[in-house]
Image (cartoon, rainbow, N blue to C red):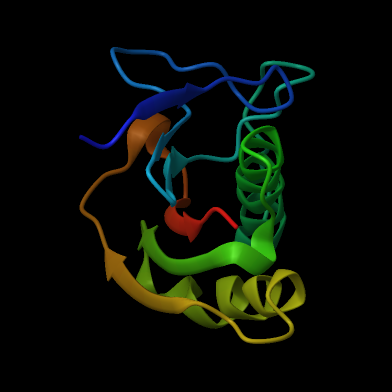
Length: 128
């Protein structure tokens, strides 16, 4: 039986529904989809997709750190974009956070994202 442990940190946005920021199951870490919500102010980061992507990845990083891992441990990301025309801008910021050995990734245009944000990213990582 694989043990399931909830990840909780105040350095990332608190869940706004019946889900966890992340879950550790065995050696896997599942990070819920993160949106560009600043946990310090409680406000969405407005602006470019680059600025929004940066906040999303900072939130993801905080959750991973609370689980005893980091971005280097991410093996798969799924990126949801409001507009696929912003892919290049998101991709440039994504590359800044995943410089070496980037994870596998899918990018999908979604008809609508929570709170009408421009980007949401979920991740799977390995706990070492």
